[in-house]
Amino acid sequence: MSEDNDEMVVTPWEVRGKVDYDRLVEQFGTQLITPQLRERLTRAAGGSHFLLERELFFSHRGLDWVLDMYDRGVKFTLYTGRGPSGEVHLGHLVPWLFTKWLQDSFDTRLYFQITNDEKFWFEQGLSFEKVQQLADENILDIIAIGFDPEKTFILRDVEHIDLMYEIAVQVAKRVTFSTARAVFGFDNSMNIGGIFYPSIQAVPAFLHSWLTGERTPCLIPCAIDQDPHWRVTRDVAEKIGYYKPATVLSKFVPGLLEGGKMSSSDPMSGVYTTDTPALIRKKIMAAFTGGRTTVKEQREMGGVPEVCSVFSFFKFIFMPNDRELAELERKCRGGELLCGECKQMLAPRVVEFMEHHREAREEARERVHEFSASRLREEIRR
Ligand code: TRP
Image: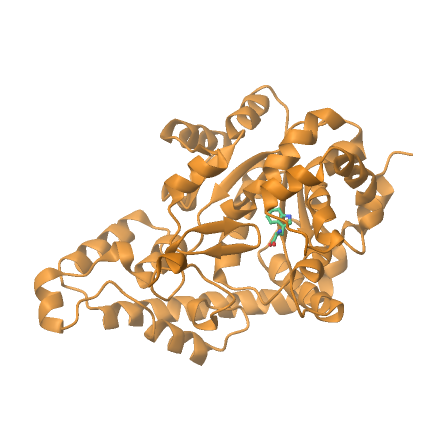
């Protein structure tokens, strides 16, 4: 592999090379979630979450501040989002499941942004019709997670721009082209929609405050590649009369192929919510593992869970029970459990999870309006 291919590039629009999370945290200037902070969040939430314990969510900005405010009786709202540029896979569902846990634990509103404008502006060759069709489908996956309909507002940028534009205008005035270029790497070939776009992604962080006229803290659970947006958003927040949004940031969910994350550019790397059971089994059987070349070697030396995609699937999705996971790891390292057997154990869990998700997804078709942000129009203070 050439050095070029190996070089780490992480932006909101591209993730390439081997991701070194320590370096990324340093580059971006975010904080690591310390054991004490994790403990604090767990206590406030009234229970732990395995994605926090296992450090998939590992970094943050201002999470300690949100908890300070919470301790003083000031509640926060949640904000996350989805760019409808393709179908949804497990790597997308994982942070959403964590977001649901936050919503349930803190009984709070969630603003969920669907960036149909962004994907039209940023993805070459994606028609607006296609983006809209993907947005419709992606929204079903979001609803299927089980968010509280009373407290969840799915905002489609194009359709709900009237709810967002006033804030976007405020943000846009305070971000220069030179900042946008430095933070996002825009060059002269970027269309002007793309240059304006970061002001739209900032909006939901302030929307609750704007609607209610009461400054409200906002917590954004998302993958760390979105951090450049929050840097800009936090920078302008106080200048336009709002609190800086806080973030809780995840690593990328590892995919089924060697090294990488689940990526839309390689369908075999991830399990999609539209995959048939047969295709799911096929992908798992073809997955990269930390196994040895021969059974004899594996019996003697054991497997290597830290590089194994099947182990990651258990760790970050399908085995929330710590004791069960420790036992799996022990058997793998000891050469007791072979990769084939391990895959046979994983496959039915994934198939069952997806079957359940698919049912919820079909039921969601009738319920899209219940989650629509258009309800917020009645809340605008006149
Ligand atoms: N830009 C994100 C994407 O491409 C979509 C998004 C908008 C988002 N707002 C967000 C993601 C807030 C996480 C949190 O997928």
